[in-house]
Image 1 (cartoon, rainbow, N blue to C red):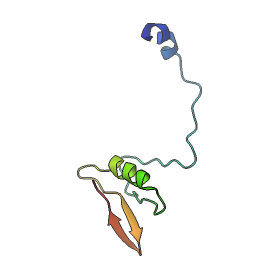
Image 2: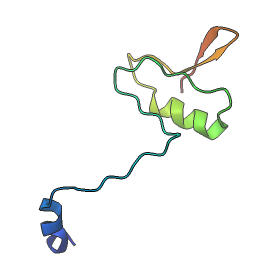
Image 3: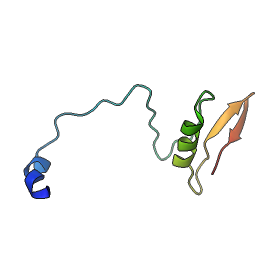
Image 4: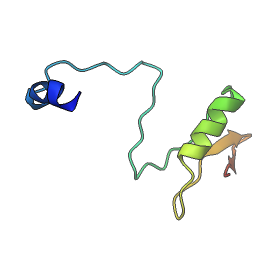
Length: 72
């Protein structure tokens, strides 16, 4: 498969997929990790798992003006 597609891999990329409008992108220095309150439990788990790093800000909910931090 590698040999068969080698020439295609060397060609420049000319087409890109557009991200879905509901997607969010954060860089490694992002501090806005607020989780929407209407998220499903699966989405919350995935978000918290994706943003749980040592020495990094934790994702959070905002309830009555207070931040509730989440971690695994």
